[in-house]
Image (cartoon, rainbow, N blue to C red; front, side, top):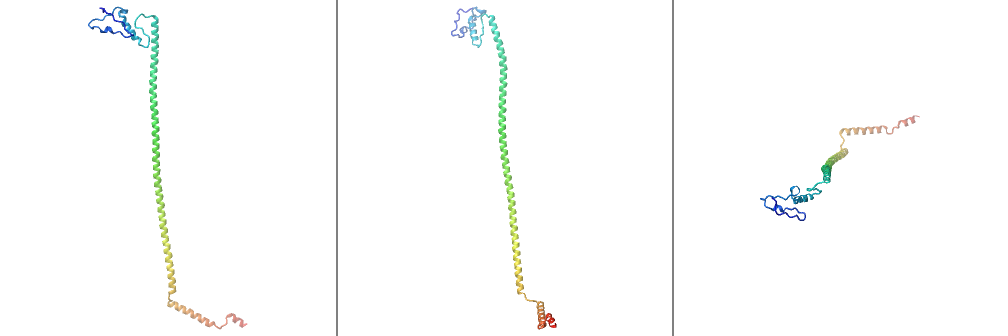
Length: 222
């Protein structure tokens, strides 16, 4: 059953939805038009199609030119689909690879920075260790030299004391001998010997006193 009131034409290219406000208990039947649908429906469909970025006809008669144009558009769209698919895949691969490159560059930078820190720690530890060893070495050498110097000083003092004691003892001995020699009284043997020598000299002098010597005797004999 056809509705008695005809829907008004849409204004400003808007979709005509006035027919949808009727009673749902009544069947909605449009008047005969192209392929049995009301022209307003096709107009609405065409307006929807016109919103697409390409020209597409949704009603009316099609010509060979329309079909050829649609085929060209389809082939072009297929080529574009293929190209865009490959381009999307390549772009995705490029972006993923670029991200991996950036990650690896960041890793290399971090490794270099870590290596620099490790080298600095190694140099610091080595310098500290060498400084400690040098300090120990100097302490050992200084202690050894100090000990040797102390021993030498003690030895020189000991030798000096020994030399002084020896010189003092020798001087005391010589002084003692000199005093003993000066104050020593002759023994009976020494007195007897000294008397005998003196007496012998006296006798000898008396024997030869006034007696000419052998040279005088020889002269007088001539």
